[in-house]
Length: 107
Image 1 (cartoon, rainbow, N blue to C red):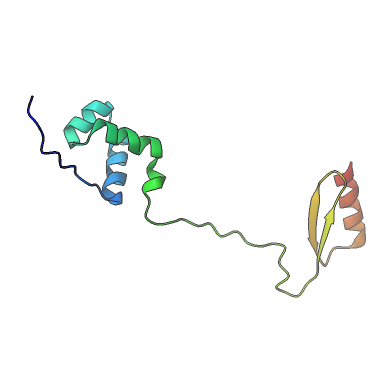
Image 2: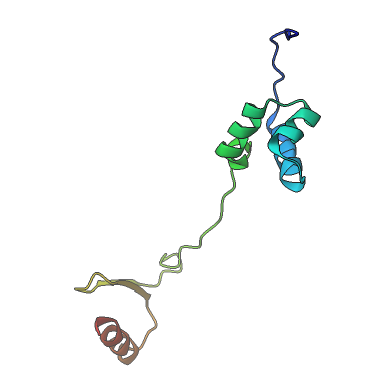
C-alpha cells in the first residue's frame, strides 16, 4: 500500500460551505463524493454532524422590535395574573377594553 505524505489539506469556511452544498445537491454516497473531491470520508462526516452553521464566519442577527418600550414617552402598564399570564399595555386603552381583556385572560 502506498504511503501518503501525511499533509492534510485545510479548507476555508467558504470551501467547506461549498463542498457541503455540493454534497447535498449530489446523488452520490458520502464515499463516492469524497473520492471524487479528494476529501476524507471522516472529514465530511464531521462537517455534516457539526452542520454548516458552525463554519459560518458571519453571525446573523434578527432585529426584534421592543413593543413595550416607552421611547415615545407613553406609559407602559405591566400586569401579572395569578395564573402566570403577563401582559404589558401601553397607554391609550380605554378602561373598558382593559377590563374585558383581563376577564378573558383570567377565564
